[in-house]
Length: 394
Image (cartoon, rainbow, N blue to C red; front, side, top):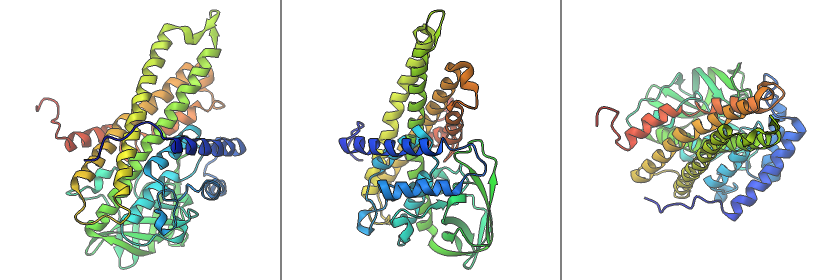
């Protein structure tokens, strides 16, 4: 059990937030808020990604410095994701720099050069709603891809960011059990079919593998630990993005209700709206603490794991991380959705228009609420982790 983390931002985290916010604000101003086109503009996504790698050096934030990466912490990654939640700039930071990098590193195999220097994009090829508990010990993971030697066959539906990936990490079932395989995303035996997604800024892709060449990275328990490690990191830090969404929605709404007048007074002076905004502020303050706690526990876990996980790793530590992740997603996802809904409603008619960005934040909040598992799913998982009986069974 680690010591209680400090849930306040450090000076270095505040400086990182300012730098990332400045970069993303300029990027959003140059390209407009992403999400109007379908399918997405791959070149534009890669251009912003290159900026994150070259100008800010955060595309490889969770790659250890010993092997040439930025050597940042999970709390640093949470700072980046909070700012991405504020702007909705379309880059695969969560899926590549967090989930895929942690999964690959945990296999014990060397990272490819593109992930070390932050120029390549890798994606864990699982349906977006797959939660970390799907790969927890004692669970049989749902796999739809078959491995025949070094070739993969099958289909994976609803994979986030697969259309901009250079590399795919594909869990697949083989003759001797299942494992994780690295697949070059540019080969002709792999097809990406865009799906009309609810949130165009986080598009889903159906993958079809027809004998795609693959390199095995891990099998058996090592593969289970690797995939769970990636999904835990992704779910923990998704909470930071959800906090960023809620912060933008609350701040934008506060600005509007101070300026919009009705009956000769600002609508923000109406008691009914004050109560709703106060409730939203309180929920957001708690969400910040919950998200920071999850990032802090993850930072401690990753700091302990500069080497790939060992078979004798502490079950207490990983259990603490699972609880923190389940709590973060059970709480932060509904806060982001509620903040976005209130933003649309309190803006009145203008909030319902396509021209106002509020609908984009609502779409992202709703889409995020099912990525890595829904809030209800995480509540059920959390109850099992802390031995909380179901209602009526106590």
